[in-house]
Image 1: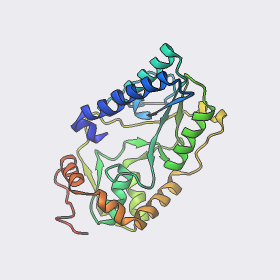
Image 2: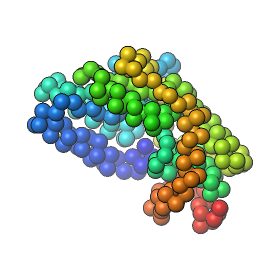
Image 3: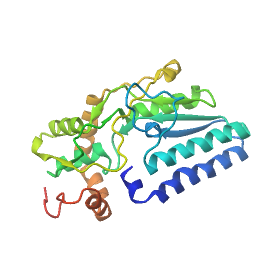
Amino acid sequence: MDRSLLDASAFVQTNVEGTSVLLDAAVRYRHQRFLQVSTDEVYGHVKEGRSQEDDRLRPRSPYAASKAGAEMLAMAAHASFGLPVIITRGSNTYGPYQFPEKIIPLFITNALQNLPLPIYGKGTAVRDYLYVEDHVEGIARVLWKGEPGATYNLGIGSEVSGEQVADHVLGLCAKPPSLKRFVPDRPGHDYRYALETRRVRPLGWQARYSFEEGLRRTVDWYRANEAWWRKRKSEDFWSFYRRTYPGLPTPASNPG
């Protein structure tokens, strides 16, 4: 999402134009199913209650808008050409192999490097964090069991704030709370996502991992695979990091 604020065109090209290319091919070759993986971010900020699949879409970032655009194209292909389209809207996904600029791997790897954990605003924005294995199983279940033309929310129903994520990570990494660093909020920041997932239940899917268990597994993986994530935190990564969190120390100034 942060990168879309710096260059929206790359997200439009990938999510909108890329989806259009795939849909054209699926229509031409009469695919049996087309599953569009979307995001809960298309709903925008949720003031109260939980987002339901038929709610109006109110994306507030270039990334979310591009995902909403892809959904519209997919449903247009369903209506116009009879393509059996199904959509999933998953909540914030995390787990092994996630690129370290995302909040959970960023917090974990920064903690392991003794670097500050940048928390937007007052750290009160909440997300529903979905462990990657649960998300993949949900997508597979919807692909095989879902109804063409329908959309399915995938989440576990938890609400965890940015500061709480930092506290959990620091505890699991045995690092001090002093590593928390509150930074200026980002533009168009949605402060709450929350999904109603009743529609997917009859398909036999439910998340197996709590946030605490999924996070523990994730921290263990990053701790055991330091060579993998250090390679990803390249100069390009740190250049993006300095633009996003100006003034925070990097390994050059804090070797860790």
